[in-house]
Image 1 (cartoon, one colour):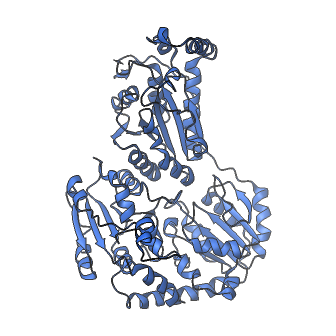
Image 2: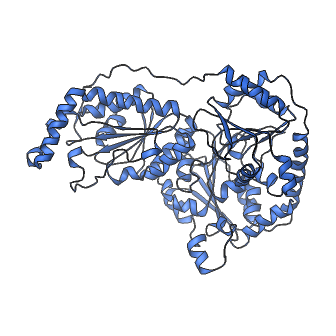
Image 3: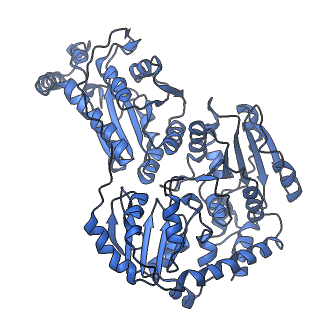
Length: 586
């Protein structure tokens, strides 16, 4: 086995192994060489090399999204680490365990004009669950060759640092900090930052393991059910005639079928789900926007719940947020281990349990189903909406709306669907998706950056065929995602190219002006064809319904390289077709 000669580097790799962190995404650099040496010479680790740090972090996030286990990203010092920030923010708000290992200069080289040096300590602020700022090995401190050339105050600072380090035991301190960071990431499902100073020489190796970390107890999070809390909720639940369950982003198969059925059997409950909820039942209500958008004030008051129960991650639908902020429930309970967002400004309780644990504890104690017409009334409305949507699709020309209808019908069963943000996920919400398809989208920060990289990382960690649907701006913004040697041959990308940010045309404001085209919609004439040639994707194109149906007929067939289908839609009519849809189904 080959190790770095630097004890701190050995500490990092050894503790990552102890904590069973197998996937390591490395961006090439010099200052992180000691870490790269340790990770890449140990067969325990699965290492990936991705040059662009922003893409690397989202790629790692995609792997962690699928495995629900910490994945590490490793970079050199300086601005490299800042490129991780978008993915870290996404991981923070999506509860995805991501471990940032940033190499750094020694303290005495910060803010003296050295290259690739910034203030890396606590650089991610409140967007990480823990920041561990490690100490330079004492051995390395003693080998600083330039110390005699340092200003006197720096020399004194170094000597004081050594003295304090000796007192506190640098090795014990570093081991403890690394262990705490890795444990927090795993238990609380979120990003952590470990900043690691290295002094030169950086590339020396040895076959000897210098360090012997003290054993740590690796914890597992256990749900603790409070029977008194459960009992306090039952009286309210039993008396409520209108109960609404709203489900955000949820891992597939995280809720047992018996509890899903128990909920569905209660006529006083309606369950609103999103495509990212991965929760299905014939009596549930997907397509929230098409349910709510056409309602008038009388209908909205009739829909207003007495009790709102939420679980899962963040919600896509703006319309359900606006509705529940105006027509507030008497009680809002959120179930989940991490933070409870007061999205509707009426949060009453945060029940810190996994949703399935809560349902398994709560539902068996529900002694009766309250007599109510709540669900039956809205099931009838849902049926009308679906019929009107089918009728509307027969009347419209080739457009974003019709394209999403066509491509979502062709998604292979028992596959994974990754969706880009902005218009892509909002259109996807309007259509039915087979229950065997697992759906994911970066809804933590809802940014268009990194969606492609995340989808590729997820495809690497999941053997199922993956289809990624994205808009043109998001795709070109993250085009370095394709600079990646790990893309499976069964990976599929569908780019809806309407030559700009079409979603901005739906919003209020003056349109069809040069100012709007340039600074809001951002018109362009780019295509994905040259990128596909560069990165080895099979490329196909469609600009009308006939071409689209022809391309979709064999798009999911097995090939020896990944595929990309670019669909060109008319930029000036998509907004009108979508807005008219909501009028039509009313």
